[in-house]
Image (cartoon, rainbow, N blue to C red):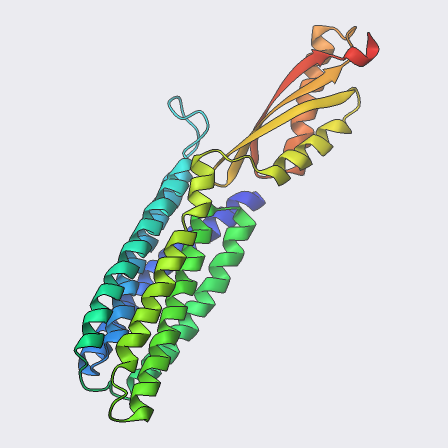
Length: 296
């Protein structure tokens, strides 16, 4: 039977690949509709989807590499590949947002004819698809504890917001009549601001992982699990690091100073087993046994 953590990580990878295929179809549809329908907001949205394609492909690659087991050269596994992939995607999103904004300003200064009204239907479909992908990807990322999955999910949400902004811009330019042509590039500028802000926010998860920020909830739970193991007088300290969807824990426990090496070794294994049983995301636990000063 597949372990829950493995199953959740597999779901994140499948959704990332689904995102690549969906974004490819949406990018083509939006680009053609934007060109034929004379909407720069829609063309800008298509450019963002192209960035999505690259981003989802990078995420999928990072998840695929991150799923490899530990080896001689990577004793803590390959999970950091997920964080690196997430960081690359954040850069792609930020770059796309800036590029869209620059071009939208050019369009604002030199307005063209208003977009065709049928482009609104394209955008409604895009918003529905991307919102659905966001909720599916976010749930899978939460279950797996994947930073790359979180980035991929919020990338979908960013695309849904930019498509909604394009929808509003086209609707205003169409209903407003002459003089409202600038609503379309204004919507593209608004979309670029959303993309840039989202790109900056996407840096949070991978930076935390790459800088080995301690997962406080994992540390707290590991301490609680170790403390109740019979023979442990006190859990002196606990440290944890994150690699992809897995965690590695180091802890110091106080035990009876009169305990022989064999019993101390057995106790250390019991602590390790208790922590791993209570926290499925934990790959390994290193337990350092110390004589308890409370019994001296």
